[in-house]
Image (cartoon, rainbow, N blue to C red):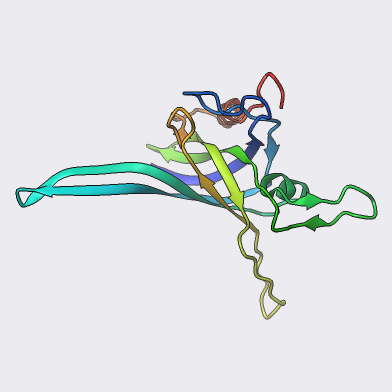
Length: 196
């Protein structure tokens, strides 16, 4: 199996009403597309403990702690940045600035996308879904134009936690078509019927 390609990066905030039902995945508000997906990489971390007895390892515990998720999109719009970071976006024709402050409170939300992969020389698709994530700002660098042109995208750092049902990541079975993969993502990152 060889993975290549990733697209359709969807995010939705937790619903304002009943966002985290017990023993369930979260309920979401209205989904948004975060922009053209460049890359996503995750790095889960675990709490570990070991106990020794009779000169050997007797007990070992390894429990999920959190997952760091690095996302890059070709361009993160001001509206999307405001939504995921909790920053303030100007609302009038004379104020269109995106303002970041020390009091910003990024909301929890869900994140999903799909990838392409080759399995025994047959093209397949697979959906990836993180049910509970929160975004944080990453530093940016700005450079003058030199002898060559380098294109850079917008980077987003997210931290994922386990949902109330214990799941922190869900990956679909192999899907036969791109439309099936899109439908799978839409089924995960969907607004709750109660609105919010």
